[in-house]
Length: 112
Length: 414
Image 1 (cartoon, each protein chain N blue to C red):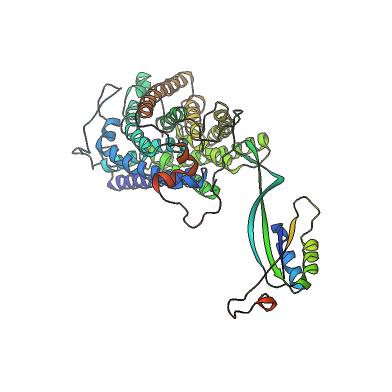
Image 2 (cartoon, rainbow over the protein chains, first blue to last red; image 1 turned 60 degrees about the vertical axis):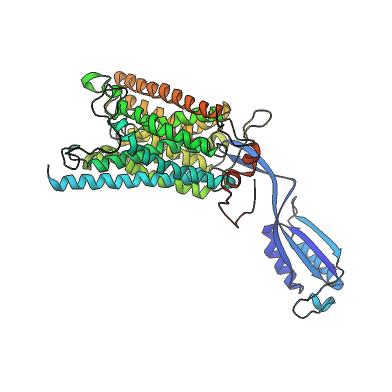
């Protein structure tokens, strides 16, 4: 089992979600995150210019069985892409165990 | 006088009283909107305190300090409470314009607005107790004494002998500048908020947390101004009240447009907070001569007020004063402009009138600055006027009040 974590543009969220549904990755969690980075957002407030490095992105956490890994990553790479700085990142990690609370199943049957 | 006309006049004055009362909602929302979330309860507390204590103080002595009857022109006192005379509820009291009770409440609503102006300027760092004591002295003594010089029949109103004197229709100087001078002295003695000026001395932006509330506040203030200026006719005179509502609205509109254009040309962005301040600048500007101006003159006053707003906000930043809501620019600088405008535009324009206006502005400036300095300096040396650094960083709501304004709805803490 693997966990794919992806930080993507909020504007690409619908595209990524639909693309993941196409390859039958139907279940995942997401939340909105704020980060800091090189990208600066220019603002003016009452005549004073300032910039913030606060960057708003969406964070996806997807737990899948090993055979789904390659197409999941490829799908996100394609669907979250704009080519501009700030498209985001993908991290893959190993998941040791997974349980479904309702049925107390574990393993692969616990994640689908 | 016809009883029907007396009733109509009095009803209009009571409607205006209610509209001026509603301005306190506008002031509160504007101040909350242009400051940070962590100080919201504190701001509400100050504003609610001002309206309550302002009215009580006006009952105790303010009304009779401002309208002492026959007096020496500088300081008089007509006694405590509301000693209503035999003619207080008859048309003889005020040429059939209103009753004694209406008079008290309308003027009482005005009084509180002067302290609300200070509240915005000192927001996010003033110690609540010290602010309350300042309000009690400033509203209880300073505001009614300055008011008595003109509206109470004092020396400013008779500068030119029988030909009149200083003119301030609804209070560009007597209300707005009185508040504005207090605000200026207060922010000078209080110092800027932590983070307002960088180590290089350059001003930093501290964006307000709720711009929709600020916008609602300004539009409510515009509505309230129909009562503020419309009621200052002191009767329901059809010609004057309708003219005053027209000049008031045109000046507000012109002030907004001119501030937004000036700010967009200078800073290359469409800043809604400047637009909103411009509307207020136009309203304060027209207040001294709302019954004297033609529509075109009202628009001219508003257009100039709008430019003053944008340049004034930058100027206050430049001299290292921190005024989170632009109160000094809106109420003091535009108040001075509106008072001078009576000598430049409209029915009373002329050199003599301009001199009377300058004397009125100067008299208010000297007395208000002196009194504000004495009160605030004394508070600074005794109980202190500023919250601790920790309290300021973590928010006055947490430390002074132990409450959140938006409980369970907190995403960012700046």
